[in-house]
Length: 122
Image (tube, rainbow, N blue to C red; front, side, top):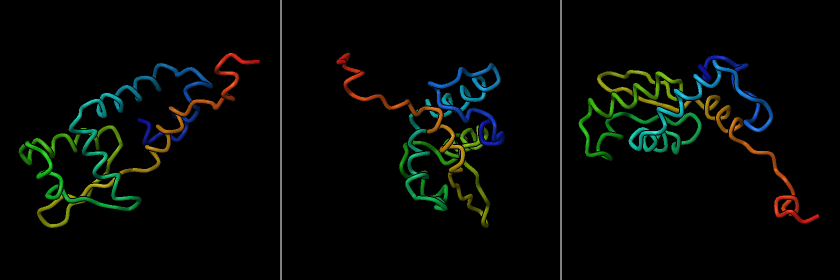
C-alpha cells in the first residue's frame, strides 16, 4: 500500500511507468476517493491542517447518512492508508496521513513546460 511502502509510487506519473503492484495500490486509493461522500470526508478532515483531528460526531451531521454509514466510509479511507484514527471514550477521532497525500501529489505532478512550447511556438 502506498502509505506503507516508501519506495512505492514516488516518481511522478510523467517520469516512469507504474508496475502492476503500484498500479493496483493506486487504484485502491483512487477508488476510495472516487466516492463523493469519502471525498468530502477527506476534505473535511484534511482542512483541519497538519495534526488536526476530527471526531466522527462532528462529521456525521454534515451528511444525510447514519453514523454507521459515515463510519463505514471512514473505515474504507483508513483501509487504503489515507486516514488513521484513535478512540477516546465512546468517540473515534480521525486524522489525515500527510505522507500518503504527499506521495499522491508527487505522483500526479506534471512537469512544467514553458508556455511557448505547449502552444507550439518556437
